[in-house]
Image (tube, rainbow, N blue to C red; front, side, top):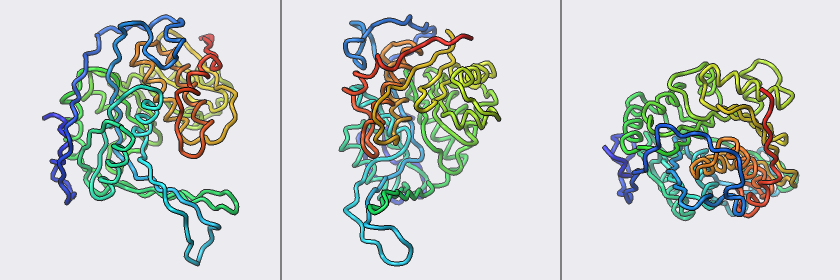
Length: 369
């Protein structure tokens, strides 16, 4: 059964809507895809297709626990009285969705597979359509969640309230995997963001099996990350985490980039993924890959907001990979996209012009093994 976009699953979603079908047909990935040598391909326009004739592979992002993000502000936030707020701003939320938005900002295209349902689901779909994000909707087993952010204008403090997503069952998950895997024949799949209640810790491994002809990139946390770190099989192509998550897994501090790189290599050797990225904030990111250990600096830029930097990194990196660049080169593009994101206000993601300008400032260095 293909991914038609029609809400067909008999979930507790009273609203059944016809949504324009989106095909997942892709070009197959060659069995052997060697790492490309480092070079200046595409340097004139960093996030454009490099060499003439380069085929861009398909990118599919997956968001199972999306949200309609509502942000507003009040003169002061205090318990008791009703708080009069400004007009709300609505945005589509969720890790995979934000990766797709970052890819679009960088001049690329992806398709966003999003589990939605109910009135909030319809609102989310409308927000994605307004941003020109090609979307494949899948019927979630309950109402799409919301998140609320209220800024206290007096203090500048922001209060963020995140509601839980609907509970998934074993049969929900089995149907989901069948739907995702039925039409994929290559390219890159990105699983990013929190997973809803009921999704098993080993879901990424199950997704690897369902999308065996594609390369899976996982950016997750919590028990799902712990499960992958033990060396599950089959392993994803790329696993990304931040420094705090890496230190929690390692059970020790990782004060230096070489410490982070060594731990990333340890995870690769254990079978957690074919390549591992650890983000170190202002110190950039490290990569353990088949051709060695690498570090890409974060550009020294004025920081206005760190929100969205991680999703921008993943968007920049997977877009570079889909356009044929090597893992180290893609690491550098991801660092540039993340650096561009912190230059923007609030929840804005990276801007292409900024990311292009910052690539050369995100120095790429091979670290000793």
